[in-house]
Length: 336
Image (cartoon, rainbow, N blue to C red; front, side, top):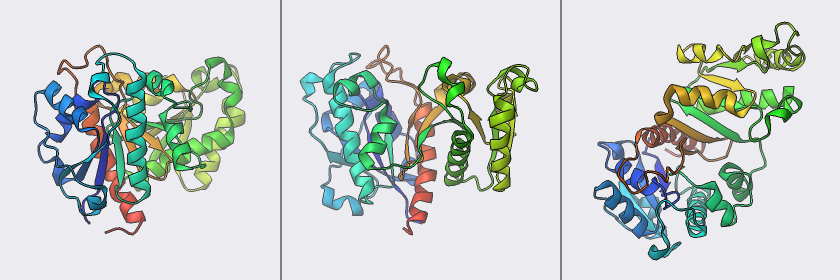
Protein backbone atom coordinates (compact mmCIF):
# COMPACT_ATOMS: atom_id res chain seq x y z
CA UNK A 1 0.00 0.00 0.00
CA UNK A 2 1.20 3.52 -0.83
CA UNK A 3 2.04 5.59 2.23
CA UNK A 4 -0.81 7.81 3.45
CA UNK A 5 -0.52 11.56 3.15
CA UNK A 6 -1.02 13.50 6.38
CA UNK A 7 -1.85 17.21 6.48
CA UNK A 8 -0.41 19.00 9.51
CA UNK A 9 -1.55 22.44 10.69
CA UNK A 10 0.40 24.50 13.23
CA UNK A 11 -2.34 25.18 15.78
CA UNK A 12 -2.42 28.46 17.64
CA UNK A 13 0.82 30.32 16.81
CA UNK A 14 0.90 31.84 20.30
CA UNK A 15 1.34 28.41 21.87
CA UNK A 16 3.69 25.47 21.55
CA UNK A 17 2.22 24.13 18.29
CA UNK A 18 4.85 25.41 15.82
CA UNK A 19 7.63 24.20 18.11
CA UNK A 20 6.05 20.76 18.44
CA UNK A 21 5.68 20.30 14.69
CA UNK A 22 9.29 21.38 14.13
CA UNK A 23 10.34 18.65 16.55
CA UNK A 24 7.98 16.12 14.99
CA UNK A 25 9.23 16.51 11.42
CA UNK A 26 12.79 16.08 12.69
CA UNK A 27 12.00 12.67 14.19
CA UNK A 28 14.07 9.82 12.76
CA UNK A 29 12.35 7.72 10.08
CA UNK A 30 9.11 9.69 10.36
CA UNK A 31 8.74 9.82 6.58
CA UNK A 32 9.03 6.04 6.38
CA UNK A 33 5.43 5.89 7.60
CA UNK A 34 3.69 8.74 5.80
CA UNK A 35 4.07 11.64 3.41
CA UNK A 36 3.60 14.94 5.23
CA UNK A 37 2.06 18.15 3.94
CA UNK A 38 2.52 21.18 6.18
CA UNK A 39 -0.47 23.50 5.72
CA UNK A 40 0.18 27.01 7.00
CA UNK A 41 2.02 30.29 6.64
CA UNK A 42 5.72 29.74 6.02
CA UNK A 43 6.71 32.16 8.78
CA UNK A 44 4.83 30.03 11.34
CA UNK A 45 6.91 26.97 10.44
CA UNK A 46 10.06 29.10 10.56
CA UNK A 47 8.95 30.37 13.96
CA UNK A 48 8.64 26.80 15.23
CA UNK A 49 12.04 25.89 13.80
CA UNK A 50 13.65 28.84 15.60
CA UNK A 51 11.88 28.00 18.87
CA UNK A 52 13.01 24.37 18.70
CA UNK A 53 16.49 25.26 17.40
CA UNK A 54 15.95 22.89 14.47
CA UNK A 55 15.76 23.07 10.71
CA UNK A 56 12.39 22.73 8.98
CA UNK A 57 13.00 22.70 5.22
CA UNK A 58 9.99 24.10 3.37
CA UNK A 59 9.55 22.38 0.04
CA UNK A 60 6.66 24.61 -1.03
CA UNK A 61 4.41 23.11 -3.68
CA UNK A 62 1.29 24.20 -5.56
CA UNK A 63 -2.06 22.67 -4.66
CA UNK A 64 -2.29 21.03 -8.09
CA UNK A 65 0.88 19.05 -7.25
CA UNK A 66 -0.34 17.60 -3.92
CA UNK A 67 -1.50 14.32 -5.47
CA UNK A 68 2.09 13.61 -6.56
CA UNK A 69 3.69 14.90 -3.34
CA UNK A 70 6.24 12.68 -1.62
CA UNK A 71 8.19 13.15 1.59
CA UNK A 72 7.86 16.47 3.43
CA UNK A 73 6.22 19.34 1.57
CA UNK A 74 4.51 22.63 2.33
CA UNK A 75 1.36 24.32 1.07
CA UNK A 76 1.63 28.08 1.57
CA UNK A 77 -1.11 29.99 3.36
CA UNK A 78 -1.46 33.69 4.11
CA UNK A 79 -3.55 33.83 7.26
CA UNK A 80 -1.66 36.05 9.71
CA UNK A 81 0.79 38.93 9.56
CA UNK A 82 4.05 37.94 11.28
CA UNK A 83 3.82 41.13 13.35
CA UNK A 84 0.45 39.96 14.74
CA UNK A 85 1.85 36.76 16.25
CA UNK A 86 2.00 37.29 20.01
CA UNK A 87 3.61 34.36 21.79
CA UNK A 88 1.83 33.34 25.01
CA UNK A 89 -1.16 35.64 24.39
CA UNK A 90 -4.72 34.86 23.35
CA UNK A 91 -5.56 36.80 20.20
CA UNK A 92 -8.23 37.04 17.53
CA UNK A 93 -5.48 36.70 14.93
CA UNK A 94 -4.29 33.45 16.50
CA UNK A 95 -7.82 32.08 16.36
CA UNK A 96 -8.26 33.24 12.77
CA UNK A 97 -5.13 31.48 11.49
CA UNK A 98 -6.09 28.35 13.43
CA UNK A 99 -9.48 28.19 11.73
CA UNK A 100 -8.29 29.03 8.23
CA UNK A 101 -5.47 26.48 8.25
CA UNK A 102 -7.80 23.83 9.65
CA UNK A 103 -10.41 24.67 7.01
CA UNK A 104 -7.84 24.19 4.25
CA UNK A 105 -6.71 20.82 5.62
CA UNK A 106 -10.33 19.68 5.82
CA UNK A 107 -10.92 20.84 2.24
CA UNK A 108 -7.94 18.79 1.07
CA UNK A 109 -9.24 15.73 2.91
CA UNK A 110 -12.67 16.06 1.29
CA UNK A 111 -10.99 16.26 -2.10
CA UNK A 112 -9.11 13.04 -1.35
CA UNK A 113 -5.74 14.80 -1.50
CA UNK A 114 -4.81 13.94 2.09
CA UNK A 115 -5.76 10.89 4.15
CA UNK A 116 -5.77 12.43 7.61
CA UNK A 117 -5.34 15.69 9.50
CA UNK A 118 -3.10 16.33 12.50
CA UNK A 119 -3.48 19.66 14.24
CA UNK A 120 -1.26 21.09 16.94
CA UNK A 121 -3.10 22.51 19.99
CA UNK A 122 -5.72 25.20 19.46
CA UNK A 123 -6.86 27.83 21.95
CA UNK A 124 -10.65 27.77 22.22
CA UNK A 125 -10.90 31.37 23.47
CA UNK A 126 -8.92 32.61 20.48
CA UNK A 127 -10.94 30.50 18.05
CA UNK A 128 -14.23 31.65 19.58
CA UNK A 129 -13.21 35.28 19.22
CA UNK A 130 -12.41 34.56 15.55
CA UNK A 131 -15.82 33.03 14.82
CA UNK A 132 -15.65 29.38 15.91
CA UNK A 133 -19.44 29.42 16.39
CA UNK A 134 -19.44 25.92 17.90
CA UNK A 135 -18.97 24.30 21.29
CA UNK A 136 -15.49 23.11 20.33
CA UNK A 137 -13.33 22.36 17.32
CA UNK A 138 -14.80 18.86 16.95
CA UNK A 139 -18.32 20.18 16.44
CA UNK A 140 -16.90 22.92 14.24
CA UNK A 141 -15.29 20.32 12.01
CA UNK A 142 -18.50 18.31 11.76
CA UNK A 143 -20.42 21.43 10.70
CA UNK A 144 -17.72 22.43 8.24
CA UNK A 145 -17.75 18.96 6.67
CA UNK A 146 -21.55 18.89 6.61
CA UNK A 147 -21.49 15.72 8.68
CA UNK A 148 -24.69 15.03 10.64
CA UNK A 149 -23.92 11.54 11.97
CA UNK A 150 -22.91 10.72 15.53
CA UNK A 151 -19.48 12.00 16.49
CA UNK A 152 -17.64 12.70 19.73
CA UNK A 153 -14.21 13.35 21.13
CA UNK A 154 -12.25 10.18 21.89
CA UNK A 155 -9.32 10.22 24.27
CA UNK A 156 -6.46 7.82 23.66
CA UNK A 157 -3.51 6.75 25.77
CA UNK A 158 -1.19 4.31 24.03
CA UNK A 159 -3.55 1.43 23.10
CA UNK A 160 -6.41 2.50 25.38
CA UNK A 161 -9.36 4.58 24.20
CA UNK A 162 -12.12 6.27 26.17
CA UNK A 163 -15.45 7.58 24.93
CA UNK A 164 -18.14 9.26 26.98
CA UNK A 165 -21.91 9.38 26.96
CA UNK A 166 -22.14 13.01 28.10
CA UNK A 167 -19.44 15.59 27.68
CA UNK A 168 -19.44 19.36 28.18
CA UNK A 169 -22.42 19.71 30.52
CA UNK A 170 -22.75 20.42 34.24
CA UNK A 171 -22.40 17.47 36.58
CA UNK A 172 -25.91 18.12 37.95
CA UNK A 173 -27.31 17.37 34.46
CA UNK A 174 -25.43 14.14 33.76
CA UNK A 175 -27.92 11.56 35.04
CA UNK A 176 -30.81 13.11 33.12
CA UNK A 177 -28.81 12.97 29.90
CA UNK A 178 -27.85 9.29 30.08
CA UNK A 179 -29.91 6.95 27.91
CA UNK A 180 -29.58 3.49 26.42
CA UNK A 181 -29.31 5.07 22.99
CA UNK A 182 -26.50 7.37 24.12
CA UNK A 183 -24.57 4.51 25.71
CA UNK A 184 -24.91 2.38 22.58
CA UNK A 185 -23.70 5.25 20.42
CA UNK A 186 -20.63 5.68 22.63
CA UNK A 187 -19.96 1.91 22.54
CA UNK A 188 -20.31 1.81 18.75
CA UNK A 189 -18.01 4.82 18.36
CA UNK A 190 -15.32 3.15 20.47
CA UNK A 191 -15.76 -0.13 18.61
CA UNK A 192 -15.52 1.36 15.12
CA UNK A 193 -12.62 3.67 16.00
CA UNK A 194 -10.66 0.80 17.50
CA UNK A 195 -11.23 -1.25 14.35
CA UNK A 196 -9.98 1.63 12.21
CA UNK A 197 -6.89 1.74 14.41
CA UNK A 198 -6.20 -1.95 13.78
CA UNK A 199 -8.02 -3.71 16.66
CA UNK A 200 -10.16 -6.28 14.89
CA UNK A 201 -11.86 -7.67 18.02
CA UNK A 202 -12.03 -4.82 20.54
CA UNK A 203 -12.78 -5.40 24.22
CA UNK A 204 -14.86 -2.62 25.76
CA UNK A 205 -15.78 -1.95 29.40
CA UNK A 206 -18.63 0.34 30.43
CA UNK A 207 -18.15 2.43 33.58
CA UNK A 208 -21.02 2.79 36.04
CA UNK A 209 -22.52 6.15 36.94
CA UNK A 210 -23.11 5.64 40.66
CA UNK A 211 -20.76 4.56 43.49
CA UNK A 212 -20.34 0.77 43.64
CA UNK A 213 -22.25 0.56 40.32
CA UNK A 214 -25.38 1.55 42.23
CA UNK A 215 -25.05 -1.31 44.77
CA UNK A 216 -28.19 -3.07 43.47
CA UNK A 217 -30.17 0.16 43.38
CA UNK A 218 -29.15 1.45 46.81
CA UNK A 219 -27.32 4.44 45.29
CA UNK A 220 -29.47 4.90 42.19
CA UNK A 221 -31.22 2.83 39.55
CA UNK A 222 -29.40 4.06 36.43
CA UNK A 223 -27.29 0.90 36.27
CA UNK A 224 -30.34 -1.35 36.51
CA UNK A 225 -32.68 0.59 34.26
CA UNK A 226 -30.31 2.04 31.65
CA UNK A 227 -26.70 0.82 31.68
CA UNK A 228 -27.23 -2.93 32.05
CA UNK A 229 -29.84 -3.11 29.25
CA UNK A 230 -27.55 -1.10 26.96
CA UNK A 231 -24.66 -3.49 27.62
CA UNK A 232 -26.90 -6.48 26.87
CA UNK A 233 -28.00 -4.92 23.56
CA UNK A 234 -24.34 -4.42 22.57
CA UNK A 235 -23.58 -8.03 23.48
CA UNK A 236 -26.51 -9.15 21.31
CA UNK A 237 -24.70 -7.48 18.40
CA UNK A 238 -21.73 -9.80 19.11
CA UNK A 239 -19.63 -7.01 20.62
CA UNK A 240 -17.22 -7.90 23.42
CA UNK A 241 -18.68 -5.45 25.94
CA UNK A 242 -18.86 -5.86 29.73
CA UNK A 243 -20.14 -3.78 32.63
CA UNK A 244 -21.24 -1.59 34.14
CA UNK A 245 -18.12 -1.67 36.29
CA UNK A 246 -17.59 0.58 39.33
CA UNK A 247 -15.81 3.65 38.00
CA UNK A 248 -13.20 3.61 40.76
CA UNK A 249 -11.89 0.22 39.58
CA UNK A 250 -12.64 -0.02 35.86
CA UNK A 251 -9.43 1.80 34.94
CA UNK A 252 -7.44 -0.78 36.88
CA UNK A 253 -8.68 -3.28 34.29
CA UNK A 254 -7.71 -0.84 31.55
CA UNK A 255 -4.26 -0.26 33.01
CA UNK A 256 -3.72 -4.01 33.18
CA UNK A 257 -4.51 -4.29 29.47
CA UNK A 258 -7.70 -6.30 29.99
CA UNK A 259 -9.78 -3.95 27.81
CA UNK A 260 -9.13 -1.75 24.78
CA UNK A 261 -11.65 0.97 25.62
CA UNK A 262 -13.69 2.32 28.51
CA UNK A 263 -17.04 4.01 27.93
CA UNK A 264 -17.58 6.60 30.66
CA UNK A 265 -20.71 8.47 31.65
CA UNK A 266 -19.30 12.00 31.98
CA UNK A 267 -16.30 14.12 31.07
CA UNK A 268 -13.98 13.88 34.08
CA UNK A 269 -14.80 10.24 34.87
CA UNK A 270 -12.41 9.15 32.16
CA UNK A 271 -10.29 12.26 31.73
CA UNK A 272 -8.88 12.23 35.27
CA UNK A 273 -7.90 8.59 35.04
CA UNK A 274 -6.34 8.70 31.61
CA UNK A 275 -4.40 11.91 32.26
CA UNK A 276 -3.00 10.52 35.49
CA UNK A 277 -1.92 7.41 33.60
CA UNK A 278 0.03 9.40 31.02
CA UNK A 279 -0.70 13.07 30.42
CA UNK A 280 2.41 13.51 28.27
CA UNK A 281 1.25 10.79 25.86
CA UNK A 282 -2.47 11.52 25.60
CA UNK A 283 -4.14 11.93 22.20
CA UNK A 284 -7.55 13.23 21.18
CA UNK A 285 -9.31 11.75 18.14
CA UNK A 286 -12.29 13.38 16.44
CA UNK A 287 -14.27 10.16 16.59
CA UNK A 288 -17.00 9.47 14.07
CA UNK A 289 -16.03 12.06 11.46
CA UNK A 290 -15.72 10.81 7.87
CA UNK A 291 -11.97 11.56 7.89
CA UNK A 292 -9.25 10.71 10.44
CA UNK A 293 -8.36 13.69 12.63
CA UNK A 294 -6.13 13.65 15.71
CA UNK A 295 -4.29 16.05 18.01
CA UNK A 296 -2.26 15.88 21.23
CA UNK A 297 -4.64 15.97 24.19
CA UNK A 298 -2.80 18.76 26.02
CA UNK A 299 -3.34 22.45 25.39
CA UNK A 300 -1.36 25.34 23.95
CA UNK A 301 0.81 25.67 27.09
CA UNK A 302 1.25 29.44 26.87
CA UNK A 303 3.36 29.29 30.04
CA UNK A 304 6.22 27.56 28.19
CA UNK A 305 5.60 28.76 24.63
CA UNK A 306 8.71 29.85 22.77
CA UNK A 307 11.07 28.32 25.36
CA UNK A 308 11.91 25.00 23.66
CA UNK A 309 10.38 23.11 26.58
CA UNK A 310 7.46 21.42 24.81
CA UNK A 311 7.32 17.63 25.21
CA UNK A 312 6.82 15.89 21.85
CA UNK A 313 5.37 12.67 23.34
CA UNK A 314 1.66 13.27 22.76
CA UNK A 315 2.17 14.77 19.30
CA UNK A 316 4.21 11.76 18.18
CA UNK A 317 1.56 9.43 19.59
CA UNK A 318 -1.13 11.37 17.71
CA UNK A 319 0.84 11.11 14.47
CA UNK A 320 1.41 7.35 14.83
CA UNK A 321 -2.27 6.68 15.59
CA UNK A 322 -3.37 8.91 12.73
CA UNK A 323 -1.14 7.03 10.28
CA UNK A 324 -2.80 3.72 11.27
CA UNK A 325 -6.26 5.22 10.88
CA UNK A 326 -5.32 6.87 7.57
CA UNK A 327 -4.23 3.51 6.15
CA UNK A 328 -7.63 2.04 7.02
CA UNK A 329 -9.32 5.12 5.56
CA UNK A 330 -7.44 4.61 2.29
CA UNK A 331 -8.38 0.94 2.19
CA UNK A 332 -12.04 1.75 2.82
CA UNK A 333 -11.94 4.13 -0.15
CA UNK A 334 -10.26 1.53 -2.33
CA UNK A 335 -7.03 3.52 -2.58
CA UNK A 336 -3.90 1.38 -2.89
